[in-house]
Image (cartoon, rainbow, N blue to C red; front, side, top):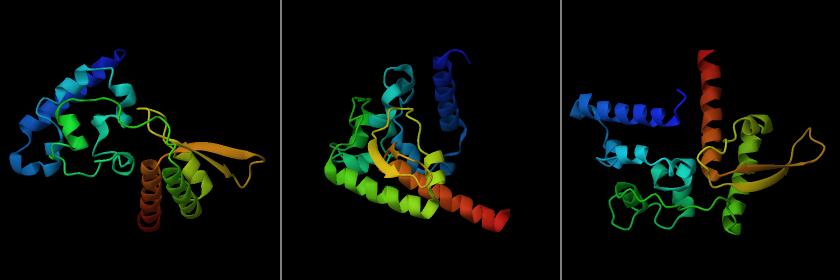
Length: 177
């Protein structure tokens, strides 16, 4: 697939097939988060480079709940962030960098806890790539075997995902391997 837009065509076609072919009783209520004309989102290639900071990822990205006013409102409230996706309003909602001290303190605290539980190497190996331009905080920490301080870019959503990934891996190794 040399044409990146071809991927969007395939995704749009698969969503359309799933809507048409799946018996109504098989769909969860979560299908309601996609507007009926969701394929419009695949035609606008300007919104994808920053999809983790616009309405495309609302409902799938915990940063909206923690960093945006209204991020936790019911999806169909006229003032909710969810409504932006329904209206195809993909303006940037989150900054590229987290700078609010209270948010930085929370992320740093969670980072330390996740490192203590999961181990430094596991956390560092599973940090998110900057695909979709996530909203990130710079965290400075001392690595046990490094000679200098490290700076990593993280956000709360990714730290939570890393923690649960580590838990799932731990259970699988214990019970199934």
